[in-house]
Image (cartoon, rainbow, N blue to C red; front, side, top):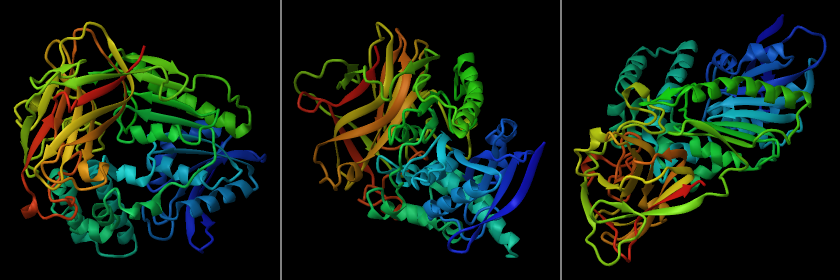
Amino acid sequence: MTQVEQHVPITLPDGATLRATVHRPATDEPVPVVLALTPYPVDAARQEMGESELVARGLAVVVVALRGTGASEGAFVPWRGHVEDARAVIEWCARQPWSTGSVVGWGRSYLAQAQLYLASTGHPALRAMHLGVCPGDPVGIIYRGGAVVLGSALNWATAMTRGELMRAAARGEDVTAELVEWEALAADPDAAARTAPLADQALLKRRFPAWRDWMTHPASDPWWQQWALPPRPAVPTLFVAGWHDLFRDLTLRQFTTAQHPGSRLVVGPWGHGVPGQALGEVDYGRSAARGAEQLGADGVEFLVAHATGETDDATGPRVRVFVMSENAWRDLDAWPPPDTVSTAWHLAPDGGLAPEAVDGSAEPSTFVFDPCDPVPTVGGPNLFARGDAARGTGQWDQRPLDHRADVLRFVSPPLGEDVTVIGDVVVHLWAATDALDTDWTAKLVDVHPDGSALAVLDGIARVREVLGELVPPGEVREVAVELGASAHTFRAGHRLRLDVSSSNFPRFDPNPGTGAGAGVTEWSEFRVAHQQVLHDQGHPSRLVLPVAP
């Protein structure tokens, strides 16, 4: 039997009231608490965290609607006030007569980030956390390499706007016209992503004003510091990440921050949604499916053990990663693995990719970048409204882009042996543009013997952001394009390919070339840029891979 209480009030120090749903075992004895803080429907969080299993194991499950969401009072502003509110909530959980005072946290996505704010309080009741697809600092959610993570950010803002419209309707406001406006926005996200300036999305400006703030404050703006995650003490945490999740690198970074001996990391071939066996154009086999199935049981065991004080921090592998293409799990002692060898593949003027740098001079490779006609996104770590079915997420064949002249492709000879990459991949480009500012994009591709070209990783570097200044037009600079982390085996007979361009839309916002971002630039101001990538002896542009033994 389970005791259920809904809309339980939790009064905050400023007088606002949050509402919680409490499910706990039918016993008179105090029990530990599993706590989740959510801006989404409470029932969705309860189902996803495996509430019934946790209650059956003797834990109470408390799911709290964050300020300004669900039945909780106040206004929801992303990341605002979470530390203070979380401190009051965990204090409430610890002092309930049905609680032992031991609290463990659970969360995926935004709920995981809320747990990081909770952990920063250092409250002694918090014993452990189970966090999936976990964001880090908010600026890393909205920006990557200095560019706006446009499609995913727009999708989330659109969804949150509908939630605010529903709350307004519940308050008695007439939102009929705005719901029609919202339907048009949600029905054509690509058109919405082409709004210029991006900050001028009318409905979002009215109902989700954070959107305008995001679009008008670039990644280097000190404005973002107010939302940064505070330092947190080491708390045993089970982190779960996906190689094709937009928060992949943020989750890995959180694992390496404030590490506790009891912390664990699992990374599978998954996106942001429910883990499974296949994603994009790749079926990763039953080992991927079994790993996903095991996650639920492992998560419950982790929370129960820490909540009851029965855990042994010294047991089990600290890191478990799925090596794609090899389609097998590998246990590691640490992340990143310390035994990889940094291996460079150099860009060649003939479109080759070789271990040796060019000896002597060579003409640069060139292309024309038109920000009004950006390279379309084909797969990657995205959270698009259109989803996986429209090449939104995961590994997809890049050949549909082969006709585009604004993509430079550098291809290796067939590999003589398997090459397993585990860790962070970086591309160093010596490059120049005649625009006031530009982006450099890079995409690591696995070319199969049948010609299919599946993307493994992609990244972007906005020059003014990564170099910290506007570079004079025509001046050659070295720019590092961080592609992020992966675990992938390039099989013998396959070829490495590196695609270099200046856009990947709508994954990222197009650079107008004016020195300002698309968030504040009119379409009429966008300018065409003439791009150069150098690869001579003095300018060794290269792909750097962490190769595992």
